[in-house]
Image 1 (tube, rainbow, N blue to C red):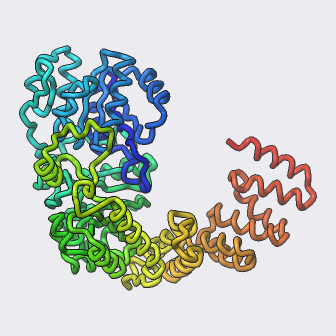
Image 2 (cartoon, rainbow, N blue to C red):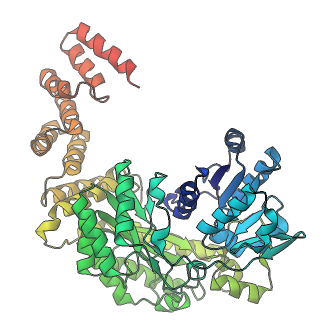
Image 3 (cartoon, rainbow, N blue to C red):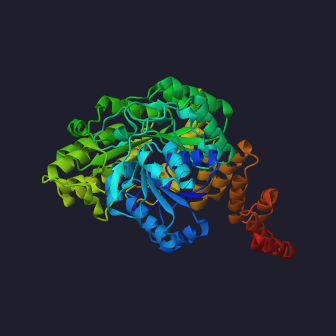
Length: 575
């Protein structure tokens, strides 16, 4: 039996695609469960395929699935519906199954209005989907009506079966890293928070379940051995259990995997000891839900964090060489120009190095949504509209679109205007064991101003100077390959070839086997007409694709057309 697990496309383009581009880790857990029981499973990431129906149809024809599972959020449910319809048109016998948080809360709506959806897996899906597939394989569909964790149709009407029990031991689940290569890992299920805009508490429950440190570390190690070097830790709050996280970090540090990773936490669940171990283990970014600088707005969200907690978490995180990213939500009940001013003041106070600003959305499964239904007398059929979400301000007479868009513009403008000062005010803890990590942190941050998101942002004045400042500061802590190369390139761009040669030569003294440092130094020498010296550097890496055309150019400049021609030919043969 051939099973596809599809991550469908979203309707709207995103400013930040990072949070939607990766297949949810839950899809890999479901796939691993099926593979561990001998099923042929393939996962398709179609998050960006909304304008390419022909490509989707070609994939479905090529794969010939018997069952298709869809990983559904509210915002990609229409993508799932569209693809399910395509699949049914191509093969009316294919079985389509929706699962995930978006399907769980709209099961009756989906089964009541969309014949292309056959079943919905409710909540935690590994064992439920496996049991459903077994029944399909045995052609025993009558037993589906009694299968726990499933919603189906009974005489054409949506029917919800009894709930499935939560998996007590997460370590009993097959490790997705045995079967798939991905860069998301997860330690927990559940969240103790009670935010009214989030569906996690009702989907997973507020009681948190944990993998063991050994399971988590083994998963990371397996993925690292497959070549994955950067990970997203997908927990709602990774740092809930401090001793467990420190155990994980100690194990990862001992393995010396040369990895980097980003996590999400709450501002009241970090401290110095924890952050020290996280940085040693490769953590480079922690995202915190700040939401607002106004305590009134945070109380509306039921966020239950204090301004002092926020200040402390950002100060400690940055001082340990970890990028502190802040999530802000605007356009809530009671939002005014004054509450936005409070958010801007807090923004300048904590100095985040990255931010994401969201307009408040209303999604099924949240208390905001339940309140919305009660107040407006709407039903789930509002989702028959081809939209991703409901914007809160559309339901509040005190707010309007122009006002809320202005709030967002003010917040973003304040952040980008203040960012250079946030960077120059960075103070890192004086812990010699962290010096190499400090250098890595500063040079990574520098790259965001020279090549990353901040480089082309006109709101950030003189991003290049900030990049150079950070690279030089990095080298005060430890020799850092990225910093040497970044400064060398920056000086080249300014035409300061002797200065570039000096910094690159220093870099080579620390990293003698680095092709990029040697090639960059050769470029500076070539710009000064020192072709013989440049050639000597390049020939050490004569098979490197960036070296080959420059070797040809050096031979040409030195009058050796035979060698130049041979290396020009090699250039054309590069894959």
